[in-house]
Image (tube, one colour):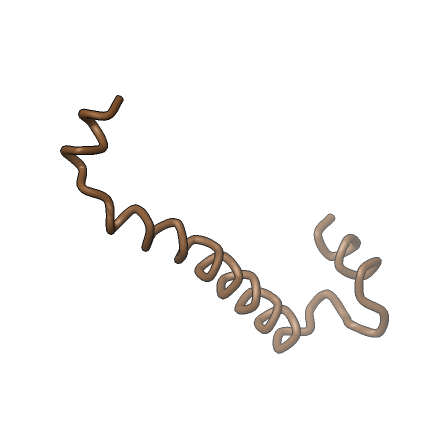
Length: 55
């Protein structure tokens, strides 16, 4: 099922094309890490005690 989906998305790329799939997975992991970096940095600067008292 996944192979059929990939075949429909990428013209000329076989579902068993390991280098292409590896690059796609690496790009998705990098995007996930970059998207979570900013909120994590903002949360790291907060004082937990002040945050809990404000609620």
